Image 1: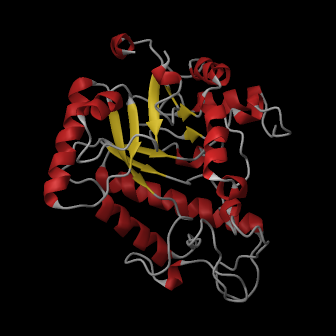
Image 2: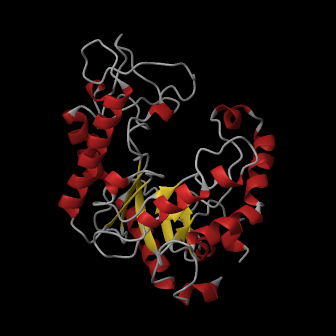
Length: 325
């Protein structure tokens, strides 16, 4: 793997969610992290002493792999709990009856049609921005265009209507899609304007995040290749459709290396609840099935190389393709 670090034409490997450098990371863990060309990590707010040690570890990773890009994770608009210091109850979207709309367990959907929510979200990003840290930018999750319908009542599965303007009438889905895309674009535009061209801004925008292209240095095609690899009836997109969108992200407005990346770790669980209800040992065996499916991972790597010259493929476990190359 080390020989690949210095080859300009090598497939570049990303670690998304699964490699979080800490202030107390061991040297072995840092050397493992240095194998990756992109790391998306949650930089926990901690004591000044711990943050300094974490920064030293981030510098070590960059020294070991000069082309490494490390960005700080920012949760998307469907992953926040009521009562946080950033968002008042008025920042969450409700049903026509006035009920909050649940998303991830314990959290509710933010109302991106509300200007106050946008302002609060930008204040949160500024608070969480890795000022003074050896970090190359930020990654904002759940920035796919449109209303976050997939996260509405994710756990309960019950159907709900959204009333974003608070008039007591359910909003049309097309109007919600427009308002949410507009809100997400306002967030990206404001972040880019405030921090300039230098930092990387990456998004989880999946297939059709064209609205983000003027501001973002890349998007993740998360779970996209499952439409081609899974034997289940899970084929919303064709090879040509995926490739067409993937190649559109081959360049960035800033001209810097493109950080679009495609998820090559095969997925088998397309539903939310099964992973939460299975016993842990059974769940681990289920996940291991995905980690060891090198055929699908190699297909994903080959697919990624058909795009731009700076392509970063996905890896979410140390026991997968990047460790077996």
